[in-house]
Length: 450
Image 1: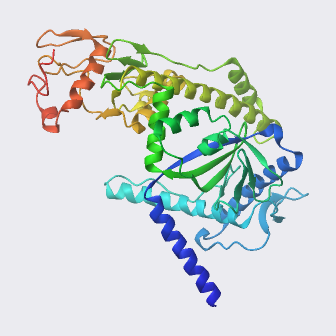
Image 2: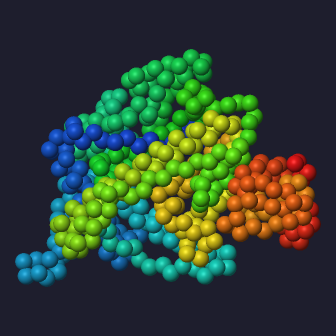
Image 3: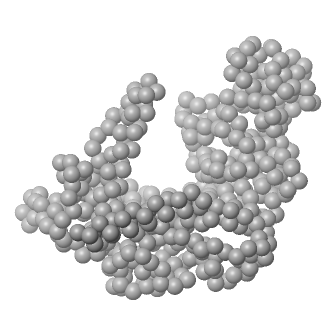
């Protein structure tokens, strides 16, 4: 009894120390791909079996009367399947690859899904909106991720670029493992340059929980890491200055999003990057449509189709990353407006353009803008197009008109660069709610700059 009490006190003290240490650390998630060319047949089968058992286990949780009272016991799980007479039965199947901690993680994810639905309903009721219709969790056709709760137990690193996962024999080789810890960088050319620039020695990076992911092109390991905040910020800024040469002269650049041109800059330049559907994707979609649902050929065609979509999504991500860094190479601070890009796909929207939005990079770029500390985001209700920087009055313009013309002072400019320039001006002193409700003929805002 004393041993159990001493152990619990030790665990409690360790959690308290970890919680205090996390307050001075930054959290980030690093995803590394498992090198499939170095997987043995036994390892492939163990990974395949692990995700199959995860699907069985999650469906058994969903089928239970109360998942909050679900108990993990035994090494078998009931699976609903058809017998030789084509009748539905419950068959107990053995759990071989899944560990107990993995099962606990899957159970906790199901509970978190219920809590998330309840929070969504409570938020709608609190805001006076109609609450969404909520039902029970749906059965899974596949499980794409398995939580690895404890570093050192469910997974551990066996070298700079290898990892061991519980119940998977041997070592798994990782691609891009140098991003997990600078000390594991095999090239070390950039790390040495960073250490010389920062002037201090690396503090160790701590590993927390992880997730084993199954995607169409293979298996991935997403690891949660914690690093000293000061070290992380200094390293990130130094890396940006070395790799991307971000100007530090206080230059500013307004960015306006649109349909004709994806991005129009306040200096008149435009950015248009698209990845249209390839012939391979269209062919895969036709073959998938011809298959009988849930047949073996249907699953094979679905895999090929998902793989083609994944390839194009990665191409768009690469273009968005390059465009984002090119914009920051032009100016130290970016000014954008919080556009509702998803609404542009609707047929009732004035700025319709579903295909252009789907094939473009606007959504990815705006996700980066919202997380970037060097980007200032204006409220979506600021009249960047209608407002005149010369007289302060507002002239409404339809989306199809490419030239802005003030109805009061005859100020004329190209529509999109005019809106991008107004973002910089209105960021100094945005229009208040009272000013927005005033008549358009009344001068408002910091006008007179032109």
